[in-house]
Length: 216
View 1: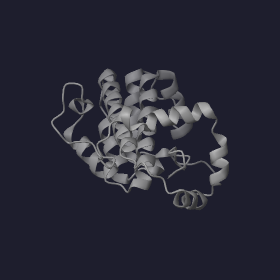
View 2 (view 1 turned 90 degrees about the horizontal axis):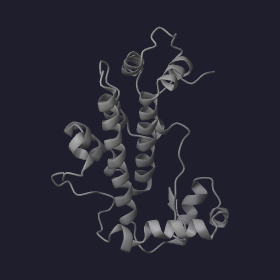
View 3 (view 1 turned 45 degrees about the horizontal axis):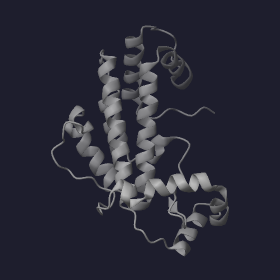
């Protein structure tokens, strides 16, 4: 990750977001969101939504904690180490993109408290997504994601949101879930019911872990 001279944050992520997550974080997400035997898919989706909202809040906290000053030479060095040209990245953004990013990083809009990417661990209010999540899951995610070094924290938060979003899309769509089992897990079409497919998906991941085997 690096931030250019306009304050825009750039991340370099792997093709598989699971690889950008600490094992403890992805393991906790899997245990909470891909539970074998879970028959209430509505509750599973509600929990996925709560995790995504929590991750979005943490991303907002990350941006609000970024310092106002930008060391251009340092950022250019990090861009080069990531295999990118700092000048080319700068040239990619038109005025509209610049306006959007400046709004995102405007301290008047996102708050001025220097939280260093962390959120207060106060008792959740009625709108806090942590109310809907197991305490153990929140504790693990806070430890595994929020305490990461600044330069990899955003990458991990984005990856976690992508993983949860992909799982939620599968759970919500019976046909997509069936296709995923056949293509990603080489699973024969032994079951076809929505709940049965979701359970089979959870069982397979419980046995093999959160990722998928690559072909070839």
